[in-house]
Image 1 (tube, rainbow, N blue to C red):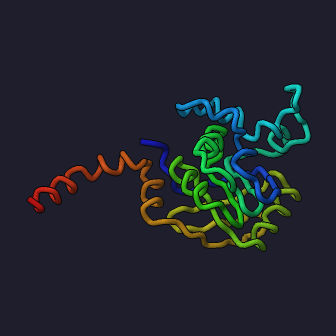
Image 2: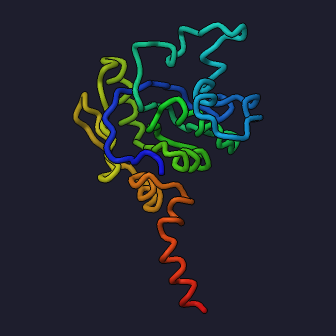
Image 3: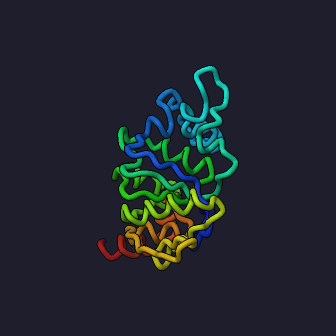
Length: 198
């Protein structure tokens, strides 16, 4: 069982770039790993932006800026495009993000995030812009992401939006269940169903 998801209130990390693809999230050279080692993937999230070719830290990249931090990544439109690699979601979760906010997600990446207990929150472009403005005006500002109510609130302005989520994935997130956990939880119902078919 994984960490249950209910209401998260957190500061944000802004990444106002559009069309961020999965190769930028986790470069292809790290895909040789076949097991999900969260620290390894988290350490290499946005690797080619966080580090220069000589391996030195790129102080200009937001993850290296101590001004920003938190469990919420606020990203530009069309986040997670490109290949279907699940490693991208592993890297986001491994870094410690629990929520990614964008005005549009690539479908496969969106599902990969949900499968790895990261909540992708789709907001309007106007709400996203206001969120970026609020973060840059005050990096200590917080958002509240309320999964039971399916709302996200910019606590700097008080404005909220509703977001959509698949009912099954919502249940799994709120109860800390992956797909296997869900089947085990419903083992008796499945067995009864099978007995009724005989």
